[in-house]
Length: 359
Length: 88
Image 1 (cartoon, each protein chain N blue to C red):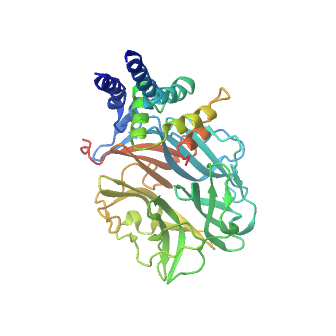
Image 2 (cartoon, rainbow over the protein chains, first blue to last red):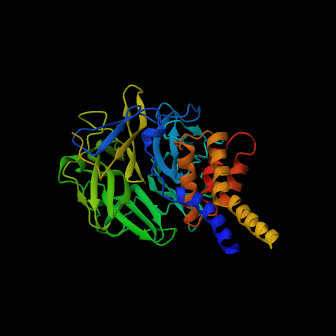
Image 3 (tube, rainbow over the protein chains, first blue to last red):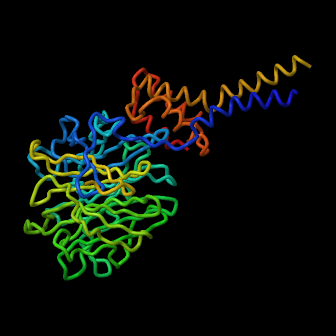
Protein backbone atom coordinates (compact mmCIF):
# COMPACT_ATOMS: atom_id res chain seq x y z
CA UNK A 1 0.00 0.00 0.00
CA UNK A 2 2.78 2.38 0.94
CA UNK A 3 4.67 1.53 -2.25
CA UNK A 4 1.62 2.04 -4.48
CA UNK A 5 0.96 5.44 -2.88
CA UNK A 6 4.53 6.52 -3.59
CA UNK A 7 4.14 5.39 -7.17
CA UNK A 8 1.02 7.49 -7.53
CA UNK A 9 2.97 10.54 -6.43
CA UNK A 10 5.69 9.83 -8.96
CA UNK A 11 3.16 9.30 -11.73
CA UNK A 12 1.63 12.69 -10.97
CA UNK A 13 5.08 14.22 -11.14
CA UNK A 14 5.93 12.34 -14.31
CA UNK A 15 2.95 13.84 -16.12
CA UNK A 16 4.69 17.22 -16.11
CA UNK A 17 7.57 15.73 -18.06
CA UNK A 18 5.42 13.72 -20.46
CA UNK A 19 3.59 16.86 -21.44
CA UNK A 20 6.53 18.54 -23.02
CA UNK A 21 9.63 16.41 -23.49
CA UNK A 22 9.70 16.91 -27.24
CA UNK A 23 11.89 19.26 -29.29
CA UNK A 24 10.27 22.58 -30.07
CA UNK A 25 9.26 23.42 -33.60
CA UNK A 26 8.61 27.15 -33.85
CA UNK A 27 6.84 28.50 -36.88
CA UNK A 28 8.52 31.85 -37.54
CA UNK A 29 5.18 33.19 -38.66
CA UNK A 30 3.92 32.76 -35.10
CA UNK A 31 6.45 35.13 -33.62
CA UNK A 32 7.00 37.69 -36.38
CA UNK A 33 5.03 40.75 -37.32
CA UNK A 34 4.75 39.84 -41.00
CA UNK A 35 4.13 36.63 -42.94
CA UNK A 36 6.41 34.87 -45.39
CA UNK A 37 5.43 34.83 -49.05
CA UNK A 38 6.39 31.79 -51.15
CA UNK A 39 8.68 32.48 -54.09
CA UNK A 40 7.20 30.79 -57.14
CA UNK A 41 9.11 27.84 -58.57
CA UNK A 42 11.27 27.46 -55.45
CA UNK A 43 11.13 26.07 -51.92
CA UNK A 44 12.00 29.53 -50.67
CA UNK A 45 9.79 32.04 -48.90
CA UNK A 46 10.56 35.70 -48.40
CA UNK A 47 9.72 37.64 -45.27
CA UNK A 48 7.27 40.36 -46.24
CA UNK A 49 8.84 43.02 -44.04
CA UNK A 50 12.41 42.77 -45.28
CA UNK A 51 14.94 44.04 -44.55
CA UNK A 52 15.19 42.75 -40.99
CA UNK A 53 18.49 44.42 -40.26
CA UNK A 54 19.58 47.70 -41.75
CA UNK A 55 21.49 49.09 -38.82
CA UNK A 56 20.84 50.13 -35.28
CA UNK A 57 21.00 53.92 -35.65
CA UNK A 58 24.43 53.96 -34.12
CA UNK A 59 26.61 56.94 -34.85
CA UNK A 60 29.92 55.16 -35.32
CA UNK A 61 29.32 53.10 -38.46
CA UNK A 62 26.80 54.05 -41.11
CA UNK A 63 27.98 51.85 -43.96
CA UNK A 64 28.02 48.05 -43.64
CA UNK A 65 31.05 46.23 -44.89
CA UNK A 66 30.20 42.72 -43.78
CA UNK A 67 27.82 40.80 -41.53
CA UNK A 68 28.31 37.58 -39.58
CA UNK A 69 25.09 35.91 -38.46
CA UNK A 70 24.41 33.27 -35.88
CA UNK A 71 21.35 31.70 -34.25
CA UNK A 72 21.44 30.84 -30.56
CA UNK A 73 18.63 28.69 -29.28
CA UNK A 74 17.26 29.45 -25.81
CA UNK A 75 15.19 26.50 -24.59
CA UNK A 76 14.90 25.45 -28.21
CA UNK A 77 13.70 28.84 -29.43
CA UNK A 78 15.85 30.83 -31.82
CA UNK A 79 17.42 34.13 -30.83
CA UNK A 80 19.62 35.89 -33.35
CA UNK A 81 23.08 37.38 -33.17
CA UNK A 82 24.73 39.58 -35.76
CA UNK A 83 28.25 40.93 -35.82
CA UNK A 84 28.79 43.62 -38.41
CA UNK A 85 31.76 45.56 -39.59
CA UNK A 86 30.92 49.08 -40.63
CA UNK A 87 32.73 52.17 -41.73
CA UNK A 88 32.09 55.85 -42.36
CA UNK A 89 29.09 56.89 -44.43
CA UNK A 90 31.30 58.03 -47.32
CA UNK A 91 32.45 54.43 -47.85
CA UNK A 92 36.09 55.33 -47.32
CA UNK A 93 38.41 52.60 -46.15
CA UNK A 94 39.78 52.71 -42.65
CA UNK A 95 38.07 53.92 -39.46
CA UNK A 96 36.01 50.75 -39.37
CA UNK A 97 34.51 49.12 -36.31
CA UNK A 98 32.81 45.87 -35.34
CA UNK A 99 29.33 46.00 -33.87
CA UNK A 100 27.22 43.34 -32.19
CA UNK A 101 23.45 43.19 -31.91
CA UNK A 102 20.93 40.60 -30.75
CA UNK A 103 17.28 39.96 -31.45
CA UNK A 104 14.56 37.76 -29.96
CA UNK A 105 12.51 37.70 -33.16
CA UNK A 106 15.00 38.28 -35.98
CA UNK A 107 13.58 41.66 -36.86
CA UNK A 108 14.01 43.99 -33.86
CA UNK A 109 17.62 44.49 -32.83
CA UNK A 110 19.36 45.68 -29.73
CA UNK A 111 22.88 46.99 -30.25
CA UNK A 112 25.53 46.20 -27.69
CA UNK A 113 26.16 49.26 -25.51
CA UNK A 114 29.93 48.99 -25.98
CA UNK A 115 29.85 49.10 -29.79
CA UNK A 116 32.13 49.36 -31.65
CA UNK A 117 33.78 46.39 -29.99
CA UNK A 118 36.80 46.28 -32.28
CA UNK A 119 38.20 49.29 -34.09
CA UNK A 120 40.83 49.42 -36.80
CA UNK A 121 44.18 50.26 -35.28
CA UNK A 122 46.43 50.32 -38.34
CA UNK A 123 48.72 47.47 -39.23
CA UNK A 124 48.07 44.75 -41.78
CA UNK A 125 44.26 45.09 -41.51
CA UNK A 126 44.12 48.89 -41.34
CA UNK A 127 41.56 49.36 -44.11
CA UNK A 128 38.76 46.92 -43.34
CA UNK A 129 37.36 43.87 -41.67
CA UNK A 130 35.49 42.10 -44.44
CA UNK A 131 33.92 38.64 -44.95
CA UNK A 132 33.15 38.30 -41.23
CA UNK A 133 32.37 34.76 -40.04
CA UNK A 134 31.53 33.87 -36.40
CA UNK A 135 31.20 30.41 -34.83
CA UNK A 136 30.92 29.13 -31.27
CA UNK A 137 33.73 26.75 -30.29
CA UNK A 138 32.29 24.49 -27.57
CA UNK A 139 35.72 23.05 -26.80
CA UNK A 140 37.34 26.42 -26.13
CA UNK A 141 34.04 27.84 -24.83
CA UNK A 142 34.40 30.98 -26.86
CA UNK A 143 33.34 32.61 -30.08
CA UNK A 144 35.77 32.60 -32.95
CA UNK A 145 35.57 35.37 -35.55
CA UNK A 146 37.43 35.06 -38.84
CA UNK A 147 37.69 37.88 -41.36
CA UNK A 148 39.48 39.19 -44.37
CA UNK A 149 41.69 42.11 -43.40
CA UNK A 150 43.66 44.33 -45.70
CA UNK A 151 45.89 47.34 -45.95
CA UNK A 152 45.81 48.51 -49.54
CA UNK A 153 48.67 50.99 -49.25
CA UNK A 154 51.00 48.32 -47.86
CA UNK A 155 49.70 45.51 -50.05
CA UNK A 156 48.75 43.38 -47.04
CA UNK A 157 45.84 40.94 -47.33
CA UNK A 158 45.11 38.05 -44.99
CA UNK A 159 42.74 36.17 -42.73
CA UNK A 160 42.66 37.36 -39.15
CA UNK A 161 40.98 35.83 -36.12
CA UNK A 162 39.55 37.21 -32.90
CA UNK A 163 38.17 35.20 -30.00
CA UNK A 164 35.65 36.12 -27.32
CA UNK A 165 34.06 34.38 -24.34
CA UNK A 166 30.84 36.40 -24.64
CA UNK A 167 30.64 37.84 -28.16
CA UNK A 168 31.44 41.31 -26.89
CA UNK A 169 34.96 41.36 -25.45
CA UNK A 170 37.28 40.30 -28.28
CA UNK A 171 40.96 39.40 -28.20
CA UNK A 172 43.19 39.25 -31.24
CA UNK A 173 44.33 35.69 -31.88
CA UNK A 174 47.88 34.82 -32.98
CA UNK A 175 49.17 38.10 -31.52
CA UNK A 176 47.07 39.95 -34.06
CA UNK A 177 48.90 38.44 -37.02
CA UNK A 178 47.03 36.85 -39.92
CA UNK A 179 46.63 33.08 -39.79
CA UNK A 180 46.68 32.92 -43.58
CA UNK A 181 48.50 35.29 -45.94
CA UNK A 182 46.34 36.11 -48.94
CA UNK A 183 49.24 37.58 -50.94
CA UNK A 184 51.39 34.45 -51.21
CA UNK A 185 50.41 31.23 -52.94
CA UNK A 186 50.18 28.00 -50.95
CA UNK A 187 50.77 25.00 -53.21
CA UNK A 188 49.85 27.05 -56.25
CA UNK A 189 46.73 28.70 -54.80
CA UNK A 190 46.46 32.25 -53.52
CA UNK A 191 43.55 32.51 -51.13
CA UNK A 192 41.13 35.42 -51.41
CA UNK A 193 38.84 35.48 -48.39
CA UNK A 194 37.04 33.30 -45.83
CA UNK A 195 33.64 32.11 -47.05
CA UNK A 196 32.27 30.31 -44.00
CA UNK A 197 33.34 28.29 -40.98
CA UNK A 198 31.57 25.56 -39.09
CA UNK A 199 32.52 23.96 -35.81
CA UNK A 200 31.29 20.65 -34.44
CA UNK A 201 32.61 17.73 -32.37
CA UNK A 202 35.23 16.97 -35.05
CA UNK A 203 36.60 20.50 -35.00
CA UNK A 204 36.67 23.21 -37.66
CA UNK A 205 35.71 23.05 -41.26
CA UNK A 206 36.49 26.24 -43.09
CA UNK A 207 35.71 27.22 -46.62
CA UNK A 208 37.88 29.78 -48.37
CA UNK A 209 37.91 31.47 -51.72
CA UNK A 210 41.12 30.65 -53.57
CA UNK A 211 42.72 31.67 -56.85
CA UNK A 212 44.64 28.94 -58.69
CA UNK A 213 47.75 30.12 -60.50
CA UNK A 214 46.97 31.54 -63.90
CA UNK A 215 43.19 31.79 -63.36
CA UNK A 216 41.41 34.96 -62.39
CA UNK A 217 38.76 33.22 -60.32
CA UNK A 218 38.19 32.88 -56.58
CA UNK A 219 36.68 29.42 -56.25
CA UNK A 220 35.98 27.39 -53.13
CA UNK A 221 38.53 25.38 -51.12
CA UNK A 222 38.25 23.73 -47.74
CA UNK A 223 40.41 23.15 -44.70
CA UNK A 224 39.75 20.95 -41.70
CA UNK A 225 41.38 21.31 -38.29
CA UNK A 226 40.57 19.61 -35.03
CA UNK A 227 41.19 22.86 -33.19
CA UNK A 228 41.90 26.51 -33.70
CA UNK A 229 45.47 27.04 -34.82
CA UNK A 230 47.80 29.81 -35.87
CA UNK A 231 48.00 28.73 -39.49
CA UNK A 232 45.69 26.84 -41.78
CA UNK A 233 46.52 24.78 -44.83
CA UNK A 234 43.54 24.26 -47.10
CA UNK A 235 43.27 21.24 -49.31
CA UNK A 236 44.52 22.02 -52.81
CA UNK A 237 41.45 20.49 -54.44
CA UNK A 238 38.52 22.83 -54.99
CA UNK A 239 35.26 22.00 -53.25
CA UNK A 240 33.32 24.01 -55.79
CA UNK A 241 34.82 25.27 -59.03
CA UNK A 242 33.99 28.60 -60.62
CA UNK A 243 31.69 28.29 -63.66
CA UNK A 244 31.09 26.96 -66.22
CA UNK A 245 27.80 28.90 -66.10
CA UNK A 246 27.96 32.66 -65.97
CA UNK A 247 26.37 33.13 -62.54
CA UNK A 248 29.50 31.97 -60.68
CA UNK A 249 32.04 32.18 -63.49
CA UNK A 250 34.42 34.29 -61.40
CA UNK A 251 33.90 32.48 -58.10
CA UNK A 252 32.23 32.67 -54.70
CA UNK A 253 32.11 35.56 -52.24
CA UNK A 254 30.24 34.10 -49.27
CA UNK A 255 28.79 30.75 -48.21
CA UNK A 256 26.84 28.99 -45.50
CA UNK A 257 26.73 25.23 -44.96
CA UNK A 258 24.07 23.38 -42.96
CA UNK A 259 23.01 19.76 -42.61
CA UNK A 260 19.39 18.70 -42.42
CA UNK A 261 18.15 15.09 -42.35
CA UNK A 262 21.41 13.74 -43.77
CA UNK A 263 21.69 16.19 -46.65
CA UNK A 264 24.16 19.07 -46.73
CA UNK A 265 23.05 22.38 -48.18
CA UNK A 266 25.56 25.01 -49.22
CA UNK A 267 24.09 28.40 -49.98
CA UNK A 268 26.68 30.60 -51.61
CA UNK A 269 27.08 33.95 -53.27
CA UNK A 270 28.43 33.32 -56.73
CA UNK A 271 29.69 36.18 -58.85
CA UNK A 272 30.09 36.65 -62.54
CA UNK A 273 33.01 39.00 -63.02
CA UNK A 274 35.58 41.30 -61.43
CA UNK A 275 35.86 45.06 -61.24
CA UNK A 276 39.44 46.25 -61.23
CA UNK A 277 40.73 49.03 -59.01
CA UNK A 278 44.33 48.92 -60.21
CA UNK A 279 46.10 47.06 -57.43
CA UNK A 280 43.07 45.00 -56.42
CA UNK A 281 39.67 43.84 -57.70
CA UNK A 282 36.24 43.18 -56.29
CA UNK A 283 33.34 40.92 -57.25
CA UNK A 284 30.61 42.04 -59.64
CA UNK A 285 27.12 40.68 -60.34
CA UNK A 286 26.78 38.47 -57.29
CA UNK A 287 23.69 36.34 -56.64
CA UNK A 288 22.58 33.58 -54.31
CA UNK A 289 23.07 29.97 -55.39
CA UNK A 290 22.80 26.51 -53.88
CA UNK A 291 24.87 23.33 -53.94
CA UNK A 292 23.80 20.03 -52.34
CA UNK A 293 25.80 17.09 -51.02
CA UNK A 294 25.02 13.78 -49.36
CA UNK A 295 28.45 13.48 -47.73
CA UNK A 296 29.66 17.05 -47.25
CA UNK A 297 32.52 16.36 -49.64
CA UNK A 298 31.16 16.10 -53.17
CA UNK A 299 28.85 18.95 -54.05
CA UNK A 300 26.44 19.38 -56.90
CA UNK A 301 25.23 22.78 -57.98
CA UNK A 302 21.48 23.22 -58.22
CA UNK A 303 20.17 23.35 -61.81
CA UNK A 304 17.94 26.20 -60.62
CA UNK A 305 20.87 28.52 -59.86
CA UNK A 306 20.96 31.40 -59.33
CA UNK A 307 18.09 31.46 -56.84
CA UNK A 308 15.66 34.29 -57.60
CA UNK A 309 16.10 36.40 -54.49
CA UNK A 310 18.38 39.22 -55.65
CA UNK A 311 16.75 42.60 -55.39
CA UNK A 312 18.72 44.33 -58.12
CA UNK A 313 18.49 43.05 -61.65
CA UNK A 314 19.98 42.16 -64.03
CA UNK A 315 23.13 42.76 -62.00
CA UNK A 316 22.95 41.18 -58.55
CA UNK A 317 24.41 42.88 -55.51
CA UNK A 318 24.08 40.08 -52.95
CA UNK A 319 27.11 40.22 -50.68
CA UNK A 320 26.56 37.74 -47.86
CA UNK A 321 24.53 34.69 -46.86
CA UNK A 322 24.07 33.01 -43.49
CA UNK A 323 22.02 29.88 -42.78
CA UNK A 324 20.78 28.03 -39.74
CA UNK A 325 18.60 24.96 -39.30
CA UNK A 326 15.68 25.44 -36.95
CA UNK A 327 13.37 22.44 -36.86
CA UNK A 328 12.82 21.23 -40.42
CA UNK A 329 13.50 24.60 -42.03
CA UNK A 330 16.64 26.39 -43.09
CA UNK A 331 16.59 30.03 -42.12
CA UNK A 332 18.53 32.29 -44.46
CA UNK A 333 19.77 35.82 -44.01
CA UNK A 334 20.80 37.41 -47.26
CA UNK A 335 22.60 40.73 -47.39
CA UNK A 336 21.58 42.62 -50.50
CA UNK A 337 21.32 46.17 -51.79
CA UNK A 338 18.01 47.85 -50.94
CA UNK A 339 17.51 50.70 -53.40
CA UNK A 340 14.94 52.46 -51.22
CA UNK A 341 17.48 52.61 -48.41
CA UNK A 342 20.37 53.39 -50.70
CA UNK A 343 22.39 50.84 -48.74
CA UNK A 344 22.97 47.18 -48.07
CA UNK A 345 20.75 45.46 -45.51
CA UNK A 346 19.84 41.95 -44.41
CA UNK A 347 16.74 40.13 -45.65
CA UNK A 348 15.16 37.05 -44.08
CA UNK A 349 14.17 33.97 -46.07
CA UNK A 350 13.10 30.40 -45.35
CA UNK A 351 14.09 27.33 -47.32
CA UNK A 352 11.96 24.22 -46.77
CA UNK A 353 13.63 21.29 -48.50
CA UNK A 354 10.95 18.79 -47.44
CA UNK A 355 8.17 21.01 -48.71
CA UNK A 356 6.71 21.29 -52.21
CA UNK A 357 8.01 23.63 -54.89
CA UNK A 358 5.80 26.69 -54.64
CA UNK A 359 3.44 27.18 -57.61
CA UNK B 1 2.78 3.95 10.22
CA UNK B 2 0.31 6.46 8.80
CA UNK B 3 2.63 9.30 9.71
CA UNK B 4 5.56 7.78 7.86
CA UNK B 5 3.38 7.23 4.78
CA UNK B 6 2.36 10.89 4.73
CA UNK B 7 5.94 12.06 5.07
CA UNK B 8 6.96 9.82 2.20
CA UNK B 9 4.28 11.18 -0.10
CA UNK B 10 5.07 14.75 0.91
CA UNK B 11 8.74 14.20 0.21
CA UNK B 12 7.92 12.79 -3.20
CA UNK B 13 5.66 15.73 -4.03
CA UNK B 14 8.25 18.23 -2.81
CA UNK B 15 10.86 16.63 -5.04
CA UNK B 16 8.39 16.87 -7.88
CA UNK B 17 7.66 20.54 -7.21
CA UNK B 18 11.35 21.41 -7.13
CA UNK B 19 12.13 19.45 -10.29
CA UNK B 20 12.00 20.27 -13.95
CA UNK B 21 8.46 21.61 -14.16
CA UNK B 22 8.85 24.20 -11.39
CA UNK B 23 12.28 25.22 -12.64
CA UNK B 24 10.92 25.44 -16.17
CA UNK B 25 7.96 27.49 -15.00
CA UNK B 26 10.35 29.88 -13.25
CA UNK B 27 12.55 30.11 -16.33
CA UNK B 28 9.60 30.77 -18.60
CA UNK B 29 8.24 33.36 -16.19
CA UNK B 30 11.47 35.33 -16.53
CA UNK B 31 11.82 34.90 -20.28
CA UNK B 32 8.20 35.53 -21.23
CA UNK B 33 6.52 37.48 -18.45
CA UNK B 34 9.45 39.56 -17.25
CA UNK B 35 11.51 39.95 -20.42
CA UNK B 36 8.68 39.64 -22.95
CA UNK B 37 10.79 37.80 -25.51
CA UNK B 38 8.93 37.23 -28.74
CA UNK B 39 10.97 34.13 -29.52
CA UNK B 40 8.43 32.15 -27.51
CA UNK B 41 5.02 31.84 -29.18
CA UNK B 42 3.43 30.95 -25.83
CA UNK B 43 4.16 29.69 -22.34
CA UNK B 44 3.57 26.04 -23.24
CA UNK B 45 6.16 26.20 -26.02
CA UNK B 46 8.71 27.57 -23.55
CA UNK B 47 7.89 24.80 -21.07
CA UNK B 48 8.20 22.21 -23.78
CA UNK B 49 11.62 23.46 -24.87
CA UNK B 50 12.78 23.57 -21.27
CA UNK B 51 11.59 20.04 -20.49
CA UNK B 52 13.26 18.76 -23.64
CA UNK B 53 16.57 20.37 -22.71
CA UNK B 54 16.31 18.87 -19.25
CA UNK B 55 15.66 15.46 -20.73
CA UNK B 56 18.73 15.90 -22.93
CA UNK B 57 20.82 16.34 -19.79
CA UNK B 58 21.03 20.12 -19.62
CA UNK B 59 21.20 21.60 -16.14
CA UNK B 60 18.11 23.78 -16.23
CA UNK B 61 18.62 24.77 -12.60
CA UNK B 62 21.95 26.35 -13.56
CA UNK B 63 20.29 27.98 -16.56
CA UNK B 64 17.61 29.39 -14.29
CA UNK B 65 20.19 30.84 -11.90
CA UNK B 66 22.07 32.38 -14.82
CA UNK B 67 18.93 33.84 -16.43
CA UNK B 68 17.69 35.22 -13.11
CA UNK B 69 21.05 36.92 -12.57
CA UNK B 70 20.90 38.42 -16.07
CA UNK B 71 17.43 39.78 -15.36
CA UNK B 72 17.96 40.77 -11.75
CA UNK B 73 18.36 44.47 -12.33
CA UNK B 74 14.79 44.76 -13.58
CA UNK B 75 15.86 45.06 -17.20
CA UNK B 76 16.73 41.92 -19.11
CA UNK B 77 20.28 41.72 -20.39
CA UNK B 78 19.67 39.73 -23.58
CA UNK B 79 23.39 39.51 -24.32
CA UNK B 80 23.94 37.81 -20.95
CA UNK B 81 20.87 35.60 -21.26
CA UNK B 82 22.12 34.19 -24.56
CA UNK B 83 25.39 33.28 -22.87
CA UNK B 84 23.50 31.25 -20.26
CA UNK B 85 23.15 28.59 -22.96
CA UNK B 86 26.95 28.43 -23.16
CA UNK B 87 27.54 27.97 -19.45
CA UNK B 88 29.67 24.87 -18.82
